Length: 193
Image (tube, rainbow, N blue to C red; front, side):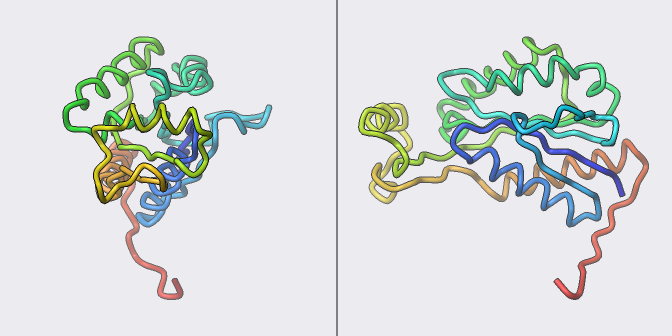
């Protein structure tokens, strides 16, 4: 069993939701996995108490959160000494024609931070039309026009995240951590659960 942190930056909450799902999937394998919004780190925060780290960030206007980029840059040496993974959340990842653009965002992040995670995942995000003001709703409808269909109307909230892909990513990260640290998964289910 290992101690793993999923630290993330989120704009509208979808990255937080994905981080929670990754932590839950890893926990089912018997590891101690916790989540933390990068903005909520206590002053005494240190990576030394974790054996592995997953970092998540979302794309807004072509950029990852400054806080996530800063966290990775500040902790690059510590991250390079342990098993790590990075996941990115963007609308581009949900659009087949824009996946190359999404991959470019990841490459930019790696170049800017100098960090080379062991595993990388890219997931579609969500549109929270119910939370947008008039102008943002119009702008987001234009940006996401290729993703919107009749069954995905631009008035309600729409989630583009492939949860099976998130679970597969989390399982891959857990297996990698187990192999790198020489620990076994404990996939026994709690009968009381």
